[in-house]
Amino acid sequence: MQNLITEHLDIWTAAHKTRSTAGRGSNNKLDLVGIKKLRELILELAVRGKLVPQDSRDEPASELLKKVSAEKAKLIKEGKIKKEKSLPEITDEEKPFELPEKWKYIRLGTGFTLMSGTTFEKERELESGEYLYVKVGDMNLPNNEMEIKTSSRFVDPFEKEKRSLIPSGSIVFPKRGGAIATNKKRYVREEIFVDLNVMAITPYTGIILEYAMLWLSGIDLALLNSGTSVPQINNKDIEPLLFPLPPLSEQHRIVAKVDELMAFCDQLEQTQSDNIVAHAQLVEALLATLSNSSDHNELQNNWQRIAAHFDTLFTTEHSIDQLKQTILQLAVMGKLVPQNPNDEPANELLKKIATEKAQLIKEGKIKKEKPLPEITDEEKPFELPSGWEWERFSSVANSRLGKMLDKAKNSGEMKPYLRNTNVQWGLIELDDIKEMKLEESELSEFKLEYGDLLICEGGYPGRCAIWKHKTIEMYFQKALHRARAYSGVISEYLQLCLFNDLNTGGLDKYISGATIQHFTGDKLDRYVIPIAPSEEQHRIVTKVDELMALCDTLKTNLQNAQTTQLALADALVEQAVN
Image 1 (spheres, one colour):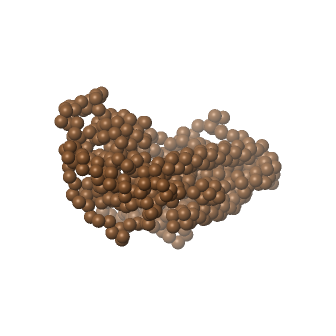
Image 2 (cartoon, rainbow, N blue to C red; image 1 turned 120 degrees about the horizontal axis):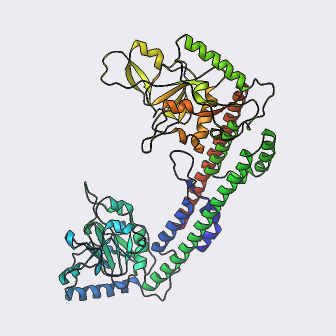
Image 3 (cartoon, rainbow, N blue to C red; image 1 turned 30 degrees about the horizontal axis):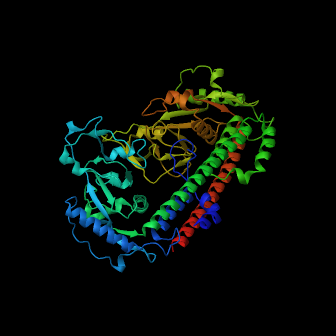
C-alpha cells in the first residue's frame, strides 16, 4: 500500500477539480479528488483484508464468533438483551468480494446490538444534567465532528429509563429524515441518551469499535432507507448487512495502519492546499505588475517575465480567471494596446456625440435628459492615457428599461421578448422565450436592433450581453435596460467596462438594495466609464477577443488534463481493489 501511494504520488495530488461557482469571480476552491479517492481506497482495502499482511498465528474469526455467541447467551440469560430472531444464512451470491482465509462474513445483527433512541417530555429536557440527550442536529456541534462530546440538551432519567442508555463503545447515526443522506457517524465513548431519530450499533467483545467505524464509513446510509414519504432506517434494513470480520489481532493492525495512512493523507492535503494558496498569491502578484505598468511599452516588458513561466503559472482555473480579469483591467486602463497619436481624441468624439444627441432630441427620437453632475476626482479610479476621457454612461449611450409585463392586457399583438434570465455573461440564450402583447405604438419603442447592449436591472444587476441577430424580431421586458451606443462608441467596448467593474466591485456603488439588488436607470446613467478614441476601442475589443479565446483554450486543455488525472486515479483504485 505504501508503494501504491508513493510511486503514484503525482497522480493522487494532481487529480483535482474546481468546485462550481456562481456569481462574481472565482472562489479559488479546489476539490482534492485524488487524495479523497486515496482515503476511500485505504478504507476499501482495509475491509477487504488487503491493507496489512495476514499472520498465521492469529486466532481465526470463527473462534471470535464462538466467544460472541457465548457473550450473547450470557446477556440473554441475565435479561439484558432479548433473544434475537435468526438471521438468514449468507449465500455465496451475496458476498461482494472474497475474504482472506481467517476472515469471515457475518450479518451485522450477529456481531452488534442495535438500539434506537427514546423520547423525554419537553419539560424534562434540561440545559444541564446527568446525561447528554443527543439529537441529530447535535452531531454538528463543535467538538462532535468525530465523537459525541456535548449536546444542546441534557436529562436526569428515572432508574428504569436507564435501560435506554446508549452504552460506551457505540456508534450513532441518523435513522429518520433527510439527515440520513448526510451519512454522519459518530463514536460514543460515554453513556448517552439519543432521541428517536438516532440509531446506535454496539459491537460485541472481539470486534474493535474503530474497525467497525472503518467499515461503516464505507456504507451509504441513504441506500438503506426503507421509508416512503419520510426516509427511515429500521432494524430490518441494517441487521442483514454483511460485515467482513478479521481476526482480533489483525483488526488492531488494520486500525493502526489506517491511522498512519490517514495522517499521511492529511499531510498530503495540507501540503497541496498550501501549494495552491502560494501559487494563487504568486499569480496575483505577477499579474499586478501588469496592471501597474505605466504604459503599453512597460507592460510588454513585464509580460515577457510572465511569459517565460507561462506553463507553470497558469495551471488552475482560478489562475486563468485571474488572467482574464487582468486583460479586462488593462483594456479599460488603456494599457492593452498601444496608443496611436493619429487617433482622433475622445473629447472630439464626445463633441460629435453631443451634436448627434441634439439632433435626435430635435427629431423627437430621444428625450432631453436632466443635466448630471460633473465627474469628481474621487470617481476616477485610475489615470487615463492621453486622448481618453472619463464620461458618464448616458453621455455615450441612450438607455431605457423594457416593457412592463401586463398579463391582464387584452389588446395588442403577441411578440417574443427577453427576460434577464435570457441575458447571461456575454451571451443571449434563446431556448426559453416568452411572449407578451404589444400595442402598435409600442413596437418601435421596445424592439431590439442589432448591436443593442442589454443590461440586467435585477437578478444579477449589471450582467450584460449584446443582441447580434439581424433577422430575429425580438423585444425586451422591464427587467432589462437596453443601451444603444451613439456613433463612435461600440457596444462591445461598453460591455468590457461593465464586465470589468462587475468583477472588481467597481459597479457596487451603483447597485441599490440589500436582499434584492437593482441597477436602476438613474444609476446606470451616472455610471462613470473611461472612453477611448473610437479607433482604439476597436483595437481593444479585437485584442480582448483574441486573448479571451486563448484563455478559453487554455482552460479547456486544463479541464481535459484534469479529466485524465481523475481517470488515472480511478484506474489506480480499480487496480488496487481487484
